[in-house]
Amino acid sequence: MMKKVILIAVLALALAACGGSAVETAQITVTMKEFAYDPNPITVAAGTPVEITLVNEGAVEHDFVIEVISVTDVSMDGAMEDHEMSGDHEEFDLHTSTPAGESSTLTFTPTEPGTYQIFCSVPGHKEAGMVAELIVK
Ligand SMILES: [Cu+2]
Image 1: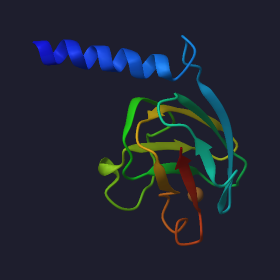
Image 2 (image 1 turned 30 degrees about the horizontal axis):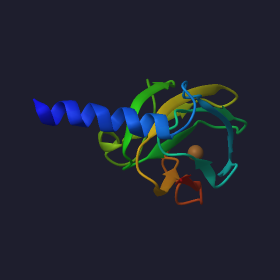
Image 3 (image 1 turned 180 degrees about the vertical axis):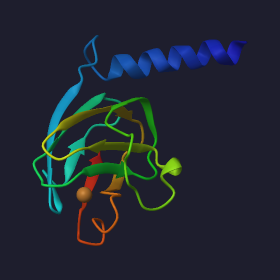
């Protein structure tokens, strides 16, 4: 019981140390086409919610995958039905798909600083060089 109280106090201090009462969501627009993401790398801050708007300016469907990343508060508003993928997609921590000419939104809060690989899981795209980096500071 005491441990829990201390943990809450520590969390409160950690939140206060981040400065500001309200945590603002960082808004980032990422363009996808054959076969690249722009910008690359994408830089975000640990503990800050991020809303990525994925705009597909290509001629075919693209998606956005990070296989392993520590995140909370994930929400994905992509068209995941009829989505053609390679590999074991159930294992991806972040994944949203965007049809050609459309856009979708991916919201999450990264919790661990590091560099994470982003790739497109549409068959052949990663091999064609459709990769990028997410840097969490
Ligand atoms: Cu692609």
